[in-house]
Length: 291
Image (cartoon, rainbow, N blue to C red):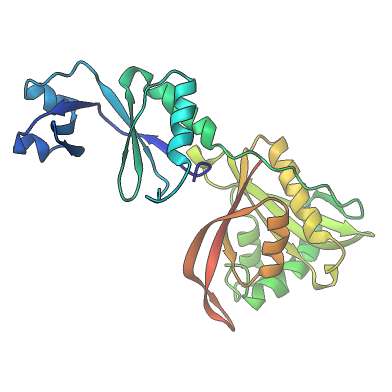
């Protein structure tokens, strides 16, 4: 949970106030009832309009990971990280998330501290495969690339390209905007191809996305491993901080095993998202690793 807690600073400021006013309690973010009285966590403007003390203005940081109420370690790790920076923290737990209230003037510092705590440590990059040469693709490679893509796309069991899209559809799929294409060669024979691109534009442009396809005769020659290792090294060299595969068909177990051994973790599952030609509706996985 710590690596995926994804802290988000909520809008507005809050105050902790003692009140029994039902109208105020109805507008509270949270209510705590104690023997000594009732505490409401109120939006600051609501408390001010009611004449309550707003001297201690608090910001709320929500940990967007689902935090199990019987989980162990998340609250302790967060509290220790903020305490080490001298930032007071009051934790309120809901069924879905933990909410951290910190002094408003320390909100950005607290957020940065939490993001640093949750940032995944990048596992080592896999070594290149010396027997496989990988280079940027040129127009002269198009026939060889099509020969590799054609059986894989027409099989319809791993890629989301239209199996009936022909050569033009395959290249449109393999060369999306912003993508770079590469080919893998063994002994002068082209046995694989890949693309590398930003996963999204704008705020998502720091994460890379890649795709790989190998010829049937490439099996056992390390071509897929070589393409993967090359794309990871190339992505890091281009300044990407992570790589994400958005749609990995769960029946593609050979590829999933290769990527898992290269440090990718399954971070999401899309139920029944892929129509497999023989297995019917199967799940698709989201896989991610830091660079």
